[in-house]
Picture (cartoon, rainbow, N blue to C red):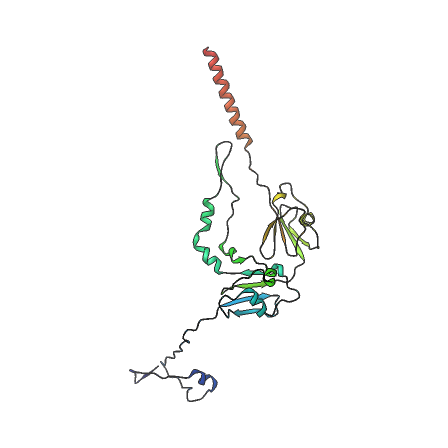
Amino acid sequence: VRIVDGIRRESMWINLSEVLNNPGSAQDVLLRENDVLMVHSIPGWLKPEIVTILGEVKYPGNYAIIRENETLSELFQRCGGFTEDAFLEGVMMIRPKISERVGGRNLQAIISSTRPIIIDSLGRIDTLSYVFSFNPEDLNRMIISAKDVIRGKTDIVLEAGDTIIVPKTPGEVSVIGAVALNGTVKFKEGKNARYYIKMAGGLTKNADADQIRLVKMNGRVEKISLGYDKISPGDVIIVPKKIERKVDVLAITSTIVSIISGAVTSLYIILRLK
């Protein structure tokens, strides 16, 4: 659109493809001050929805979703498959839209309102301090099994913004929590949880050996025993502490003494009255 004589507007149709392919052609109009160039979008055209796959695949990068309900298994094929160093048990999938969907539900307030209340031996009200809190963005990490996807046992429909990370095979197992020394131990095939905990200095006195958790690289969490021997490279063993309620012995003793003293005094008065 061009302003002519300072008042009248004149419209011209330009073949942009001709301009780009043949610079200097009749379509390559010399622009003037105050010209307005409008490029219309193709009717029905939609911006491509992009997913990203990174790490140990042959062709990492961004991929457009080419059809409705395209799946993760199809993306694995499009990216050329995995490298020899790929660790399939640790494949992670991040979906930012999840936190957007749950963000408005005020889940933390609901969690806080359901915090257990305890009345101790002295009638005092207390709430459990170990009730968890969470960040909605933590929910973006989807727990998947890449091996099951490859075998056709399950699949996931892709969404715009998804990011899939295929890590390199690690060589260690980490141990944290109620152990002598938090740290990382070299992975050894067939060794059980007791071995890795022992390498971290063993359990502390307040360790809760019945509540040990194993966190896999893909985010899956399992409750395990000390004899559990299906440890994989990259696993993290978490040993929690026992939850103990502190007892105010002095306050309880004082209360008992007061009750006994009151009873003795009452008995003495009754006997005197007789």
